Length: 112
Length: 115
Image (tube, one colour):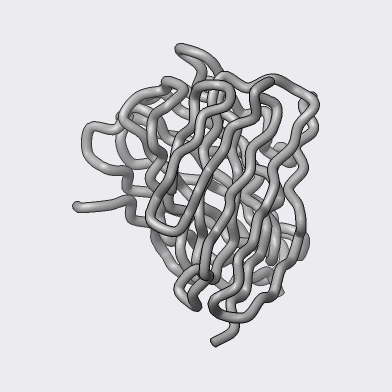
């Protein structure tokens, strides 16, 4: 059974600050997805990373997949109240795999 | 419809009552997932369908939980003899096909409260 850890579990910051959240595992992943879930809604996909060392940017969000494909990070620059939500990482399996399991998430609150 | 639709949005059940939760996936999506989400936690996998075939039900917590997708589209999650520990948000997601990089689209969930 793979162990998936997200840290920190909770994060409360002021608008304009930068932050990084982490997703770590003991297993190697074929790919990894990050989702954001707002209160009362289902998770929404932010990005999929596939290659070890890959960096993807989505406006103020920067996602990195570890070289060994066992960990990932999400960095937010100049956080805004609209970034508030539960950030979930989901390792994906290889070709033909339906696997979609989530970490416990990082609950981010950005205070105006 | 444009997205995944779940009904009801809210359900209050008395302990011991049976409930049925419905999921209408995006038309044409082969894959369908059910999750249970406790307050402040990430979604926990319950079961997976590929068309009408239930390929994985390893996450169902007990034999009181049953899911079906008889025609490969709409799915129903049934919980028999509900218990207080069943109180949670139940999320449904669908995807085009069961491959690794496919985006999963989620419904808003059904919040079940067992009293």
